[in-house]
Amino acid sequence: MLLFHKVPNKLLPTSQRLVRCLSTADTSAISSASPKSQLDEFYTYYTTRKELRPYIYRPKNSSLLISKNLKDPKTGEQLKPKDPIKPLSSQALISYINSIPNGSNDLLNWFLEWTKPNHRKRPLWNYITPRHIQELLINSFFKIGNYSYILSTLYSTSNKFIHAGNPKIFDINHFFDSYLICNIHRNQLFNYKNGSNIQEKKLRTCWNHIVYKKNLKQSGLTNLLLKVLGAQQGFDPFTIVKELKNINTIELPIDTPIVTEKNTLELENFFEAYKFNYLACKTIEEFDPKLISESSGDIKTFITYFSKITEKLGKEDYYTELKNSITRSLEVKKISDEKKSTEAIEVKPETTEEKQDK
Image 1 (spheres, helix red, strand yellow):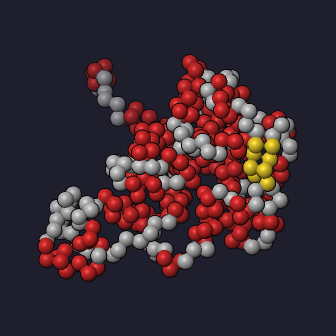
Image 2: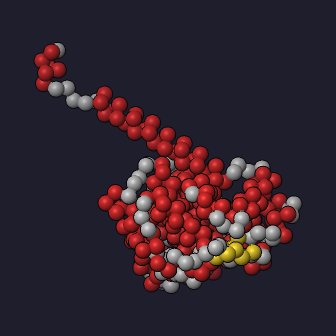
Image 3: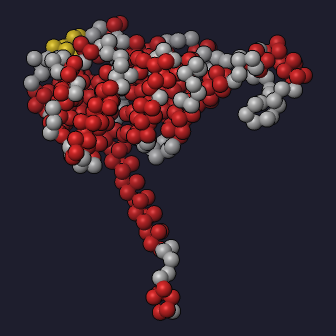
């Protein structure tokens, strides 16, 4: 039997209160620069040598910087004074991710660059939150592309994140759930089956990277996603993820006041906070509806509430939007691949026989 906790809005996890906190923050403290520019400024500051920062970023030292004629170690150009670095909000990265068009390599290139410095650049490594990881994985899979590369980069840089003091990004409810959702849909799209135990190996690799398990006892949705993956691929995932076998507590915001409020900002905050929960629930509903019917009914209630909020906001259904997005992306890729194949045939060198015929 699945157990559901009704979560009061004021008790939302930090990552789910993200949008609300930002929307009520003092906007005078937020940079007017684009999200990408803010990220670049932050990155440049923390990858600049410490001894140079006081000269570059303190206005009172600007004349001293110019008089010393100091050169940028990377470019060789003269260093110029810059405005003091501003705090970087978590929303900056989320906004940047959501601004990147389908098929672009910008997100992958940004992430590869961000994870180049060593773990001693702690502010860079600790800026990334579990919510950011969820945005990276879901958007790279369903919309932007390069999901596999981003996932493998997370695996290969996991020690850097951990040594920098940020193991929280390798958690169950953001990282692992996103992995399960993406792989379930990926298996369907490409008709992947459990050949040579590949799916078990992939699941084991991901689970071995999950080092932050604080919310394990509230991971009932993860339990259901594992059951979906296991049924789809014909293996028992709980031989690998033993800790989640008997976890059945699901936390969903049922009957919270915000659901019935008409305030657009509050509804928008609710949508942003719970859209990934909705994605998980709809994935379970599509691939194994029996699991939904066997629950106490609160998953269906949550799906209905979230759908109503989406309608009030005039948005496209989030699940439908993502499904349509990846379908379009695959069609574009297919056309592109066919075009490349045709062009390759058209420019194929003449054979000896063809030359003799002429």
